[in-house]
Image (cartoon, rainbow, N blue to C red; front, side, top):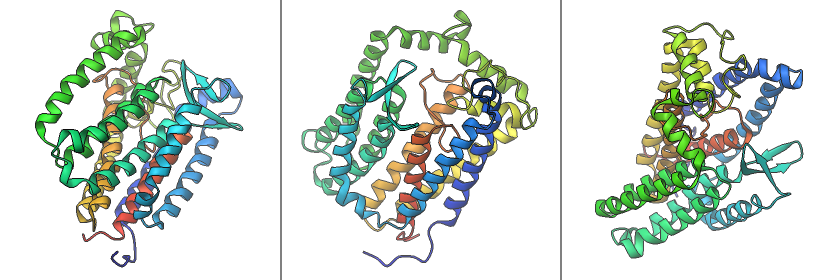
Length: 366
């Protein structure tokens, strides 16, 4: 392997820390009213998010100093462990049920979400598989099919929770990686048709998903139920205007937008900081995408390139879905906004992923 560079990608570090700082401020601003009402402590969610950020930053800087090819050597074990956790989370008494989904495993006063860590495990395993099977990638049976069987097995287990949002991000990231590896276009046309039929089947099989689709098309059909979140989100974004109402001045966080510190935190940010604030956040995410692609193109081997591209694809897909939902451009799916939304598993996973990117950057030719 090439000698290490003296420093990792400085711009990526600065952008990540900036997004993290914005997220900590916005989690407090969005959650203070609800936390004070429910826990008699306006800092309840903010304090926990600071703890999550501390754990995530420790993981990021630790992983930044772990040679990225270690992930190749351990990828099989890591993905097996994640599959085991996906089984355990479905067992009553081990898996914690929240809002109709059994997606968490309780660990003391906290909980972890195995499906979040499966996303990174799948990226690592596919990076190893695709880099070692380049000669078969144009063959559907020998190259593409084995990878897809693994991906959709994991997706099926995640859907048993059910967690369509996380599963969609994992599948989308995997498809991008397989496509970039050189798979034939005709394979994706067929897969796209099958995927569309499968998506329709998933929607039809669960009445609440049908309501989400219809509320996305016209939220005013059911403004107090399935369309409630989208309407309240738009009520937050609209008054924000160009410069916003001012930090801490959101109106929708006063029990209008449910749990605004989670999936809909971008709506509160747009309400308080306006179009300028929202655009700044999107620019910061674009910078992560730029630096990640640059790192991937300069990686010294195929494994490093696939690993970096998988991580940036995961972040980009998650941002696009979250912002699309918040702005009413996509149906509600329950996807967090990376680095900003409240949640330990999501925040820790994203900071770990950035740590991997930073280590690859230390070997990058760019």
